[in-house]
Amino acid sequence: MLAFSPRYLIGNHGAEGVPGFESGVRCRMRAIAADGSKCSARDDEAWRVIPGITLEDKAYSIAFHYRQAQSREAALRLVEERAAQLVPWPRLIHGNCVLNLVPRDAPHKGDALRALLAHSGCERSLYVGDDVTDEDVFRLKLPAVLSVGVDPGPGSAADLFLPDQSEMIRLLDECCDDDRALNRGESPRAGVSRSVYPVLAFRMQCTLVSAFASNCVGS
Image 1 (cartoon, rainbow, N blue to C red):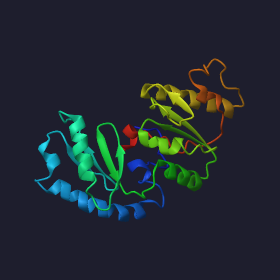
Image 2: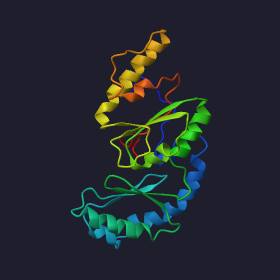
Image 3: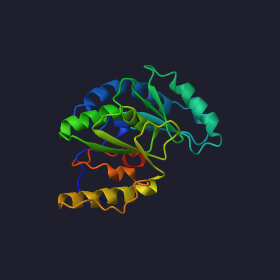
Image 4: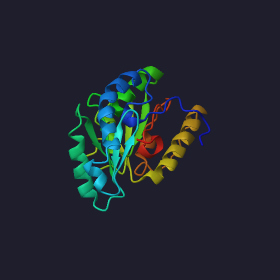
């Protein structure tokens, strides 16, 4: 699908794909996964009574999906109660009709981005996120990172915002066009509206280290 091979593909909320992270996370995840597998194997689990709840083993995390449940509120309460019984108690990450369970000390997306900047040698990063877990990056306020939230919730710590995911293509196209202009020694186009795309007013010579979007990398 892509015309290039990404240097990094990060999943599981920052715990998967970062050089040096995976072995430690796998060890910590085994304890949760072992208890979590009991949830899947046992037929007498309470959450099985409600149609539409499924359990997914993602190797570095496990996730309860409840989008198809008739009462999503009741389904969420039930899986939260079950997750609270796991030993060791995991970190709960709420998503769009999904409850993710990860080790409490597992690295998050902010940790992952710090590590990628160091590993890649890049001085700057453009980070785009559309999920609540992207706030782990936004709150860092790293000088080397320009953060963009896609349709974020109230109180988001992102530097800049886009209204929805459909704007991502235009954003990346504009960034690429302006980068080519800079490489040719030209000034970026003055016609781009800074009120709509203030991100384009931020000029940087860098490699795009990572753009986390839950629908792209699966977590």
